[in-house]
Length: 573
Image: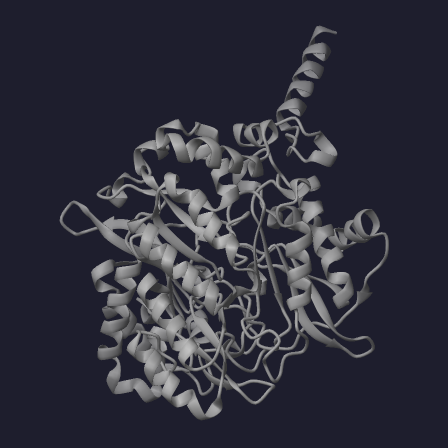
């Protein structure tokens, strides 16, 4: 009898040990916080910190800022402390945030759909020059980021931005981040539908809504009606991609659950057709599913992709329709494989007969002076509209076709190229060690040096290079520069220097790509080769070597990504 009791007790104990811990899903487990991040969000909504910034912190200075505001709620208004100069990448993982950070901020200006007017561009240029030491970066989320911002200057910066209908509201934080949109919405000759009204309605109704400002983590949106699918929809939490339904006409195909970082997942189609008038409500349903069912207990599993992984698209669609919409969505076809690049670099005809011109800086690095000069150039050529892109580019709209060649030449003088080399066009880099507290290696200057070097090294095979060859460079494993989706992706880390020490370098990912035209629709994540790590100073030499191998051995019509997935490891090192 005693033996049976012990056996039963042991069995119960084992069951308890194996019992699955709750994920802190609000609709299942309640809203009691299971970590400090959830505590401070429940204690005080992140949106409320603005009043303290304006009334207290800007007046009393950096030292007055409380910890939860500084390292938490400030993000809800687009503010992060930047990295203190002089701290090498080897100390990133060993120092506390407070030791890594400076008393200055990165400020992210939210640009839903990447839309800007000339007046707005002039305002940003002025803020950059007066308050940000001239800094300005174009991000791959269509935002503009400034650095060296003092807390004392934030209220005045907000006043100037809001005077031209710009803001930093929810540019960071556990909220709906900027909405990616087609940079040529409303002007392209071949777009399926213009998503601008949908983006504007979502922004006006839901951005800054306290009911949606406490999500498990960030929520990323992409909406495009362009056939090039120009918003990297496979790696967003929700994407609405333009399709022409055989029965209902133009609308959107719904994708959910994409995201990269250290555990990358591509979004899945729900098979649902969304009519334009349904799109804001469908978006609202998906973000509320994330709020109510998203995992909150562990920060590294608090993205929608993990819920999608566990539920699958069929259950997700069922919950969306039954609990949040109250009606069934129609089934719809998948969008076709794009036939053209989605970065919009170059000169292209608009539907009204004018041209839009896509311009490439080097890895998104511009400055206040460049932005001001671009605004002046736009005024000279009679246009007031431009867009940023998810590829760290800008697109100027409404240029007369007779003046396009002259405009291209004038833009080139500003360091903005409409006919760039394949390397300048297709290389992106994150912020890196210069300003980011998570970074291990430097990226922007490294990338610029690599581009210059590759243009010289591969000049003799320029005509044999593919139309696109993406090279994405990230300073840490978090993949802000989308390294797993690049032909050649570089993840920053410290590597052995051969002399008993360490040096800045990269792990190499090869053959990544989204479902874009140059991979014939065969999108996917890149592969890694065991032991393949390259020092920062040797990247150009490595890329030169592997690209020449591709040129000499690939099959006719085979993209670099396709070749890289079946090439031997010897060919890739």
